[in-house]
Image 1: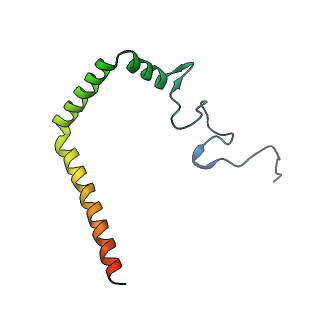
Image 2: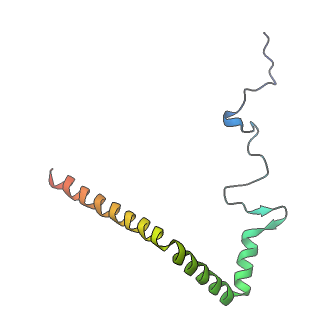
Image 3: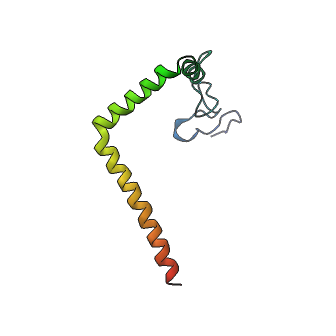
Length: 96
């Protein structure tokens, strides 16, 4: 069996050996063709700050209304984990 110099082994996970495909420059590159979605959204908020704020408040209210218990439970879990970490650090230092 002969080896050809122009044949490369396949890249892991089926990725392109030539790098990213599709033209994305980074993980937060939100461009569709020549349009930049992030900049368009920021321009919209700059032009209409009060309606944007009202829309965000309404979305926050609705999310809190329908998923508030789950969000509260997650926040309580995070607070409990942080408190237990602090207590563990205190008990580990007192044994030394």
